[in-house]
Image (cartoon, rainbow, N blue to C red):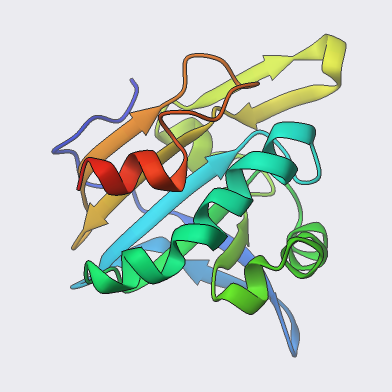
Length: 162
C-alpha cells in the first residue's frame, strides 16, 4: 500500500555517513515534534536527480526555513558513502540538506514507493516524490508520475502547496 496524506510514517532506520563512519538514523526521531521535508530520488548522480531535484531544494532551502521547516532530508536507495559524496558534489550538504541512504530499500518498500527499471540498471529504487511530515504524519505528498521528471516533487512545487 502506498503512503498517503494523513498517514504516519512507518518505523524506519536510514543510514548516514558521519565522522565516526556509517551511523543509523531513526526516521521517527528525526520527525518527532518537528516539521520535516523528505524528498526521494531514484538514484544518486542520475541525470534528473543530480541536475534538477537536489538543486531545487538547494535553491529553496531558505524559503523552507522561513516556513518553519526544521530539516530537509534527501533519501535514495544508495549506501551512505555514495550519499555523502553526492551531497558534497551537489552542494546539498553545504546548503544544510541531510543526505540519508535507504541502502536495502526497506523504508521505500514500507511506504510503497519502490520500483524496478532493469534496462537502466535500477532495482528496488525509490519513486521520485516530496513530502511534508509534521510530527511523524504526512501532511503533504507530491509523487511524480515518471521517475525521469521533476515537476510536482521539486522544491518550488512543494513550497507552493504549503
